[in-house]
Length: 219
Image 1: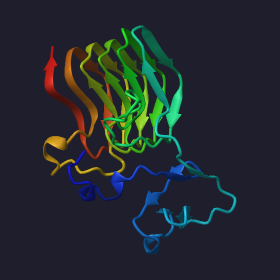
Image 2 (image 1 turned 90 degrees about the vertical axis):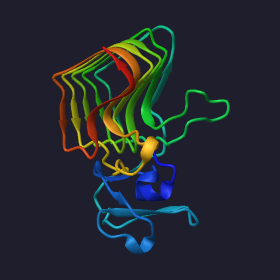
Image 3 (image 1 turned 120 degrees about the vertical axis):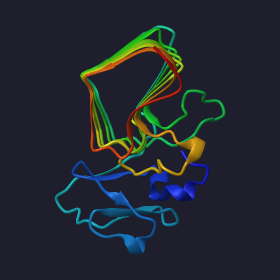
Image 4 (image 1 turned 30 degrees about the vertical axis):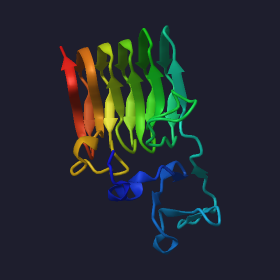
């Protein structure tokens, strides 16, 4: 999301640590560690946390992707929760054409898809990304505390997004002001798509734009 990753601060790092389901804040050095904060010591290969772990559950994200779907058929996601994955900002990986991009769920080339009554939360970056898909409906789903962009749809058609809640998007604090053409972070980002119906959605406490149609949103 920026040609100079140093401008993103710690948002550029996908590591996540949780204490009793609450996210801790990553810092750049062990000297900065205090209550509610953590540091990744890559030399010693350990995580340093500043909160007392006694009697608490400490969890660290260790997977970049919760689900990848690549099919010419239909796909439905009904009443399922996805949380605490750490996707990386990567656009190409040799031999793994679908295991790329910064979302904990990626859905590609489906002929129809229904996402309903689900919870998509606490991704280090994006929540769900659709690519080259048709007849997509997302309804009654909660998105909250996702680190970067939340719901992304590209090169798709016949899209209905209704009765969803988007809360505290861009929780990691990605730069959304001075990133030029690399700016991509939005709660709902739609590009190169047509026949789009967005209604009765709630966007609250976000650190980025709510709805962003870019580079060709038709109808």
